[in-house]
Length: 153
Image (cartoon, rainbow, N blue to C red; front, side, top):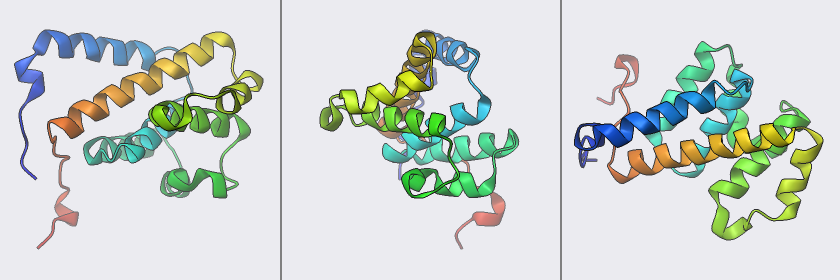
């Protein structure tokens, strides 16, 4: 895979604003583990290796269990996720796959039992921000770091 461009260098002002928005969303009060689950699941759906790598490492750093990290792509089949996390992951998938889901009531309604209106807006912003980062990284072919112990011979 060939990196297409360093988009941070080409549009530093816009990317600085994007980084500010990302920081504001991260500091909005969500539990760090929920934030990582949403970012990881979105990045998995979008096939963004750069972001999957980063969010797995961040989740580990913040104390997320390895088993939950491994199972986030199959969260529906695992009892390791709370009802609140399930509602957030369902909304994450609905918004990331918007053309298919149309953000139908069946995806939105479960949120109301677990999140306040403010939290629903914060969650939706989080999903939007990570989807934008994924589109930048995938579109411009950002390369994740390769750890020495996992290099291919």
